[in-house]
Image 1 (cartoon, helix red, strand yellow):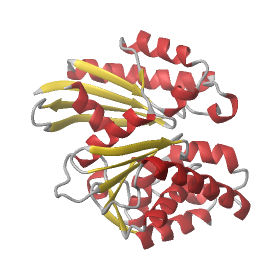
Image 2: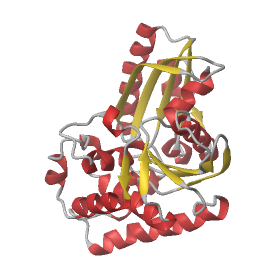
Image 3: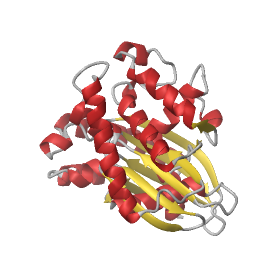
Length: 304
């Protein structure tokens, strides 16, 4: 077994996984997994730049993670950065800060690479020969991947809970017009994804990342967030629609009072739920298989 660390820095959150991994079998024993909402993508869709306060929040999390990595004695580290840092003009400031704190250069990966990691991490424990559509709904982008043991086709499109919220939402709860604008963006992005990925042909829909796991936790009626109960839960299309409607009718304070909604997701979970519902309806899925294992697990496996 090799002790490795993987960091996934997205538009909304930065996450760390330290694990012992068998490089041949792919067995992964988790030692530490944590997430911090840093909103690195704050304003990027509008300004094209990473905000100074967003960078500082991210660097503070990096300092915490560096201490965890040192204490657990990880032999190798891979730092992957996704949508927000791909889009920013001043991404050199981000890269230099990460190198100074962690000693490794963040890999600003393409959407297709992001999709590969997501698929590998999400499906490693699933059995069977069914064709799967893996959907990773992030803060700035969403990845669509079709395959079984291996990726057949993948596409990343620029719809995510942070990007759509910043682009369209000005009221709380959002108005009918704002909701319609979000749905129009999602449907256009689904058309774009379908040009490269046969999203309508999969037998199983697998959903990843915070928007999906939060919707699942609400649907399950959990009194507090429990990753073991969320992981591999199956949420029906009807439950996805019911949770989305509940969120659409709620105020910021009402969403904040839902115990499974992370404080950093209160303002963006409506857009995230809308993305999920549109995908479920578009592909005609009866349910979503929810996975807590995602791009982070794929990154850790790739290090080993």
